[in-house]
Length: 317
Image (tube, rainbow, N blue to C red; front, side, top):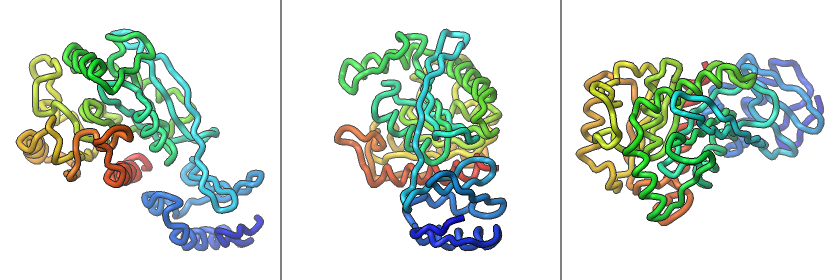
């Protein structure tokens, strides 16, 4: 294999390649997210593909590099999934190529797949995940509906949230999981992630036994009864059905989930002996959204790293 000037990997045995590359990995620092450090151990396979160096681990393509530049191009497509409550359009973002990847069910705010949500999903996909973004209110809107970040969009989204029973999301989750299991790119591991109501819906997805790790960003209405639910079906009443690890991230300046509401959720998770990590930042609601005055880029980067850390430990087994 030809030497590469930026990575200093010369012709050598497979064991030498592994040792040299792990040392070199620390030298390239921010080119690759830290969670991958844990996976640069045997078995590791390095091969030459055209002008790219391809590094593979556990049967999925970790990254490609050309002249020292990290590359993880994303492909996007659409799947219209049948659910008991109607067709659910689902946007799928995943790395190019034919590798197998862990899957993340990614839940939007009340506005469905807006530009910020699509970009967030692609950020996660670029780290080696197949990311599915469903239209969370598919029963209540035409296929392809995206609500605006304005008063009209907010009013419509909140009305939709109050109109859909929480158990409708259970059948949505089951449909996405069943679809994922049939795909050639699926590696056998599924997690969930979401923002705002999507944080709650990710939490709800964790009720499914297949979900191994869940990242919930400022999950609304876990401490309220805003989302319709039948007796015994509120998400916080189903904690015994969650088997995976939870990551709970909040903004202290979030009026939608004030300190007493966060404290209530924390106590219930602790009392139930849930496996979870809890982070509160000096940030506002929707601090992950890369549009508007509430966006906090630096804290958002930390949020992505926390989620990637969770998924690196739970979805690569």
